[in-house]
Length: 364
Image 1 (cartoon, one colour):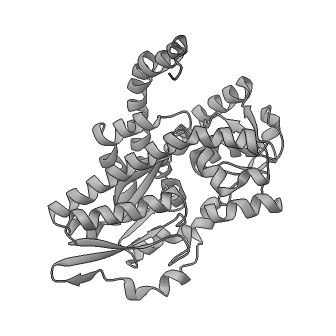
Image 2: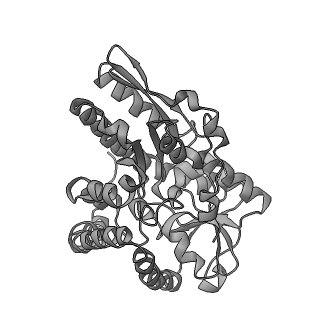
Image 3: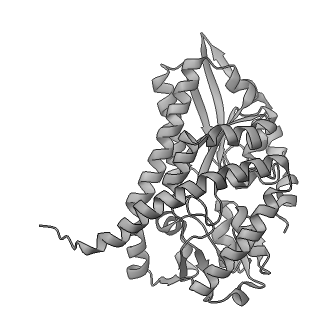
């Protein structure tokens, strides 16, 4: 695949034009950071970053504020981490697998195929040592401090121009899928392509790609993917939930007073909850609209296909993790936590979801 070459070869021309922003603004004990995003201004993710910045400004009494630049406003989407590492910005926002060209372990922070649900991911992050482990194995080696800054929850499997029934249908497919899921698909002969959100619909419309995953019904409908293709598959085996990352220049982070660090951490945690909860609240309404008003065909991956992909994932992903000591340590940390979560979730969530159908409540 060409994804890593693309990321490593990203031009920094737009970063170079912004060197005047390299030093945080300081005035009477107040600091202003520049924040750059891999996501556009429109939609939930853009709104969430603005709300995060507003919270930190208010909670700190203006001691720490942000000048927020969404994708394309200061740097291109996939240049956000370059901007922070170069000192052009102090904070960036994106998805960990966008930075796979910089780290062999960082994609594991985002999501793992057949891995943790959103609730399990949060348990890992906040009470299972996940934040510290992500810092140690992925972000600090890049000169950055990691904070989870959102979660998409359960994603959908993706949009396809044609039906996908067996593994043979994956061979030769041009499909947009970042992260570890893309690594798995590539072993079936899929031509996996990494594109920023702004380029997905044009690529789908032109036929440059045969299909794409994005997030879920609400975000997918907002992007207009249903206007081009109609086959919408589930479940999202590749990303049962996806962590979004806030990454901060390590020197800027270490220079903050402890009270400001606490405010930033709390703001990030609130943003994480906000994004996950909002997606959960609006996805089903969007899904109904897609199927009833836009002729979208909701299709379930066959058991045969999911089984084959799962078996392949269990081979491919450990091999990828084992390439580096950091990757191996992070992978083992997640898998160890997953084992306990799988047992508990099977007793609690899985059995309850089956049992819930017994009570057919109706509004009164």
